[in-house]
Amino acid sequence: MDYSVVVYLAVINTITFIVMGVDKRKAIHGEYRISERTIWILSILGGATGCYIGMKTYRHKTRHLSFVIGVPFVISIQLIALAYLSFSLS
Image (cartoon, rainbow, N blue to C red):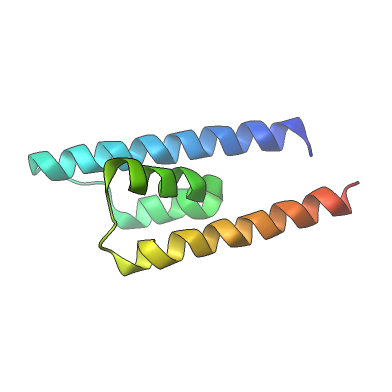
């Protein structure tokens, strides 16, 4: 697998994890929130694992069925895509 893909995935997942933490803090303090749309975009762009870890770490979005079901689904799609790319480029 190309090194740039690994770096990209590390960066996007770190950003998504941080966004989940920031949104949780804003929710606790009643501040203006980060939209679910933004979190979904980050997840779909490769940050689904960071989103999932953020959900578990911060106990955030765990009551939203779309996140509870959707994020693991996106992770599985991304893993299938990565496996396909890894084997097809070999």
